[in-house]
Length: 188
Image (tube, rainbow, N blue to C red; front, side, top):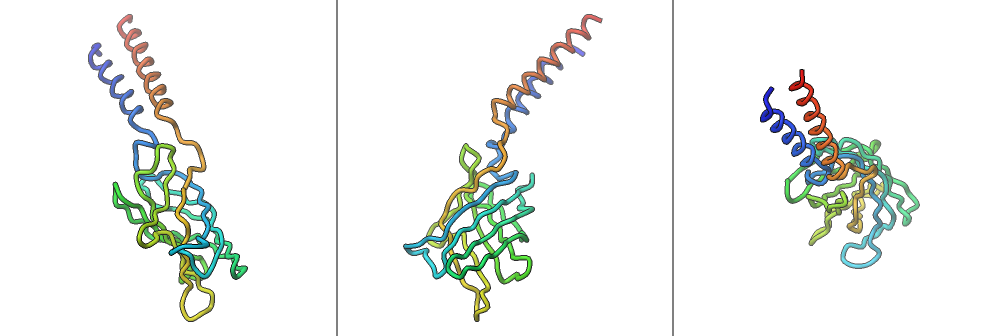
């Protein structure tokens, strides 16, 4: 093997690893925590107050694969869980959205959207505009489900993701290893 192919292979490895970081992909991959409250005043305040918290996990295709969310409704003293993810809608460069259903009562669900790409810290923010994009329908035994909106807030990574500099260091290590291999091949 000549010098040029090994150099090109080493350069390819460095650029490949340097270009793959959690921040270069604008869509979420991994497990995130969510902890938001209902607004107590303003246009989005509703009849029920409480806190929604738990985790969301996205796969490499940015599909929501697992959810473990609990809404503690302090108004009624009821707790609602959301564990069955529905379909994930992805509009690259704009929004990713999903609905998560209650396992016992599919009329009870939580729906959200996040603006993509997220911030450099790996955090994604729930979006809220003219109509809030993070809300729940809670079946409380009445004629129709109770509509509850939530304050927009962050969805933060649970586990640290590799930094671009770590991946660059890994890539240069591979390039160095290829250089040593090239020298050994030339000396034999």
